[in-house]
Image 1 (tube, rainbow, N blue to C red):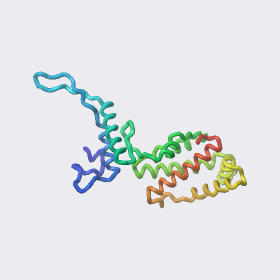
Image 2 (image 1 turned 135 degrees about the vertical axis):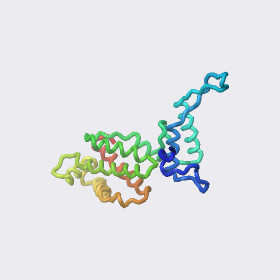
Image 3 (image 1 turned 60 degrees about the vertical axis):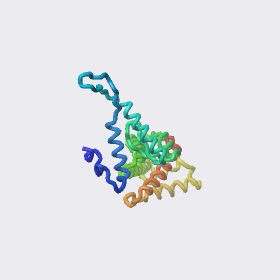
Image 4 (image 1 turned 45 degrees about the vertical axis):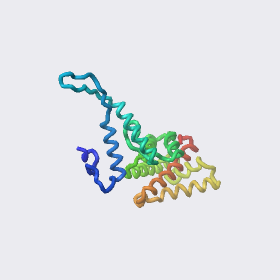
Amino acid sequence: MLQAEVPGIEWPLPDQGPPPTDIILDLLECCADAVGEPIKGTYHRFFKHYHLNWNREAGLARFLSDVNRIFARNGIAYELTPDGQARRLLPKPLAEALRSAVFKTGDDETDRLLNKARHRIASPKEDDRRDALEKLCDAFERLKTLEPGSGKPQQADALLDRAAVPGTEFRKMLGEEALALTEVDQERLRSLEHVDYLFLRMFAFVRMVLKATGRGG
């Protein structure tokens, strides 16, 4: 049963060391999904035991508090959310930017991709973080078509012209940054640190452009 819920786990846990981080977090999520607090009820005189009730909310709250306290005391940059899901603790400036960002691009699919990306990047799982970058890149490409123009290059230039005064050094820098971000090959990013770096760089660019063009940010 446990192996079905947490693929890759060995039980009992092996003596030679703990399992990988993602398996530990999966196990904690599995426990959070099942935990509850027993409540002692009336005493059964004949069978000499207490009737027990089950308080899901109280048990989950205590479990989350205990786990998150252990994480915090040991400097482990994860936490369990109120619904028992594991997530990374991001640096405060980034966490605040992701939390407070507003997406009003005028295109529902672009807004959906941006919202999905900002939530999945906080996942401790590699596949989720790579998916977050993929969705952000898709949204980045769609942003280039929001302004009027005869083709995508002209539309992208029109977008950047609204974000910065044409002919200025900053406008030139935005164009160079947009080109650099466009040319990145995601599939060659083998390190998660590289995935995180590119996500932060692209998200900062997208958010700045959205703010400058009145589309949220």
